[in-house]
Image 1: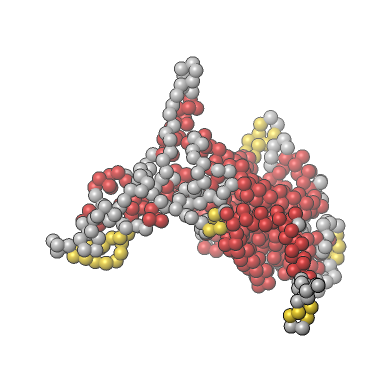
Image 2: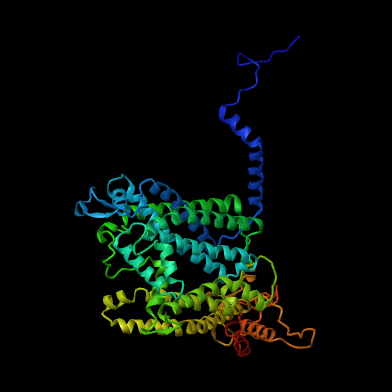
Length: 554
């Protein structure tokens, strides 16, 4: 006989699943669901540092997403054409004004389309923030030697910066207002100043005389070439990061990549996106209606480029006048060639530095640990010197505004920036090295003597001193100082000769490794751990550094 279970007056039947439960179960059991679960498990096993320096990549990613979303919307409203048109829109001061179709479409987007100005300004703010985020990420990667494990990723990140600059510059020219027209006129002058190839390059960009078809030529670069390169480079960065464990500082245990770091990154992504929209809604940027349409015969006084290209303009302004000569029937304008060569050499040095350091110091250990900048005085000094050099060029791009705002002669301002470009990096390198050594010495003293507790005790002899406490165990690895590096040994080749490149490498390696405070052996106990009293009987040698310690630190 079949047994029928009756509960609550109903027949014994299996409970029916809801539609959402059925869909969720089917998704989990599908191939994509299983792969997603496996990826989530791998992320849960990865340990990621919570240090603030790891967040600039999230800021850059938020800028890229905002650029893509707003750019897709602007494509429907923008007219990439230099053909003349008459503006008949809501902005009364320019009604009836003849301008290019590109400029008219920008005014139509800003004043006649609901939310158009918000979208346009969000696009512009994201374009301004993206190079800053990438530069900061490059700086963090440089000063912590994160490039040591993935030198290819350093080149990808550097290429991402160049693509961001190219995208911002190409978008800067598309509104075809007076400001962008002045910038394009300067750009054409630079191209024409290049010997032999200058005329051909000008024809390639402009398609003839100024302004030619510059808008039609730059528009495909801005909406197709730059986005494709951005997507490809971001994918390469993500692919390289997923293949290795994230690098961490010594003593940093980190947190799981999922869900801890994923939630933090998602929150920062939302915050950056919200701030970009908020700035777009409250702060006016690129008001093209104030400068008016571009005119080949006019120029905008006091025009300034966007901040990320200011260093290029500054390099041109710092060259003394009259630097040109005639050779082979051509006029060679050094006022253009030297700035281009200097800026090109600087960018090449930035891209090639990780490979140069590997050649000088050897491959080193691939242990996934980051360097504290203070523990590598030479590298940190070079980085700060590079930042000072870049900052001097960037500041020189606004030399005219500095002169007018502060009532200083323009020539005096230019001379000051010329001196800063030459002497500033040298002074920054020397000063940074000494500061790094002082910070190393401070960390060593903390390990040996402990940290100040703020408690004053009286010694048996009547002297009052401050009691020190030992550094917590989890912080000792971080304060241990520079890691040991194998010395570079000069060896002769098969013929018994020592090549000049070998001698140069040995000298450079000695420069990198000199003036370093010798790291304490791992696990070395502090004076408190060796039984030295602290609060009740702290010795004088715990409070004051010895002369031997001072000599060793120097």
